[in-house]
Length: 188
Image (cartoon, rainbow, N blue to C red; front, top):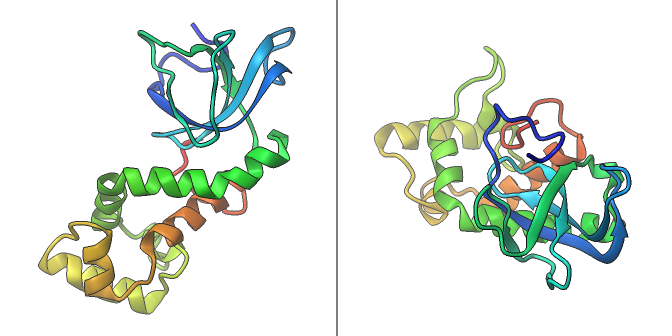
């Protein structure tokens, strides 16, 4: 079992590579060396440190399998990382990789927007997404009452919200960097 990655929680199946060191030292597990990969989990959107199988090659933005059974390039998930502990390169790649995840998992994010609820009597979860203020939120709530949004394009057409993928990406980054106090998408 991977250390520091509790068994009761759901495991990540896939992660996207943000950076890697062909000959690195782990920052989460003492004494572990080898191909050290910084990645972001596809489901929980948490930053992970991963140990690659010797002689495997990795590319920035690559989707790698980190699930329990049948890993081909990954020896182990070493642990979770905080944003301020990852390399500058990983930080630079984060926005592009998160955007890729949001784009590829469109249904999951659209489902979220279709079902998001008020967080407090004053604040609705939708308002926490950049670009969605009170006005867009009202329109979104009215529109989804009539019919759920099918995809980002549908949302853009019916609500007028520009670049929903970029706005959700921005929100995910705010959660990863710790700029936001409340998380909608990133699982701690």
